[in-house]
Structures are given as structure tokens and as C-alpha cells.
Length: 197
Image (cartoon, rainbow, N blue to C red):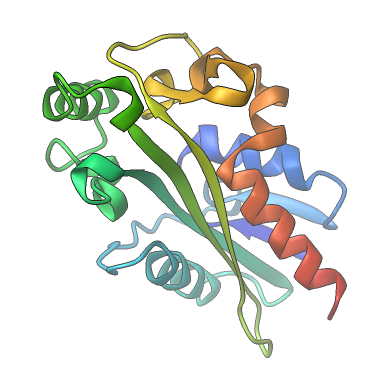
């Protein structure tokens, strides 16, 4: 089976390709397939957004391809689960990591460390013609720091402390992050369900 990753985010594409390497006949990004669609993510859950993306991309993909799509974001307990599905555009329309991180820090200003709990959540949907969707959820728990730390990753990674390794996601190597990330866990769930078909 060939696979199309329903994303234009090259960080995400590389992470997914790395984790799924060897599991599919070929794996393509949207750019590699010449698909130029920006799906409006208006669902109220990560899973709804992922399913919408998967099906809109599947509709314009070659017949021998399945599509994998995800929606992921950060949920912060002290903010009632925000930014949640609005993670990418938390500080306004567009995808400005610096402004999103600045807004998050401002909202959590003065909150004691033990209460700065949160998690990265990833909903992953694999859609193929003539098959039921395969859906998987992955979660990585952590704490939100008071300042950015680390140069790697993207999004909220510099603020997200993964306590078992005492490092932020931005301080982890790609291999370290891919081994424990919310996206990894969601992809493992997809692969497990695929193996049982």
C-alpha cells in the first residue's frame, strides 16, 4: 500500500516518515504528490479534524494510495485544556510558534510548577477507499516551563518538559523524540490495528 501524509508541515512529515519507514510500499508528502489543498480544520476534536483532512486528501489522491492525517496539539490543565484544537493558531490566525509560546507563558505567569501540567495529544486517522477508517490517539504528558529551552523541535516543544528524561521536546534528538512522542504513540496504534486487519 502507498501512503500519502496529509500535511504540509515538513517537521511533521519527516517525523511520520521516520516512524513508518519500511511499513508501506512508498510514503509521500502532499508536495511530493503535487496536492495543494489547505483543509479547514473546524472540528471540535482532534479526531474530527484528522478525519476531515484524511478524507479531503483521499478524494484527490491516486486510487492506489491510502491517506494518513493527524491533528495534534497541546492541552494545558490550568487553561481548561486550551489551546487544544486551536494550538497552531492560539495567538491568532497563522502558525506563529513564537507568538503562541509567548501567549501561553503570559497566561501561565506566576503559576507554580506543580500545577503547570499538560499533554501533547495526537489523533491519527488512516483512510483508504473501501475500508473503515483506522483511528488512534497518542498522548505524551509533561509540564510547561516558564521559559523556552532547547533549539530543536517546533511549536510548543521548547516549553514542554518531558519529565522522565528531564528534557524539553526541543532538547531531544529526533530519535529520542520519535521514540516517546504523542505522534509515535498514535502511529503505533495505527500500525497495531493495521496488523489485525
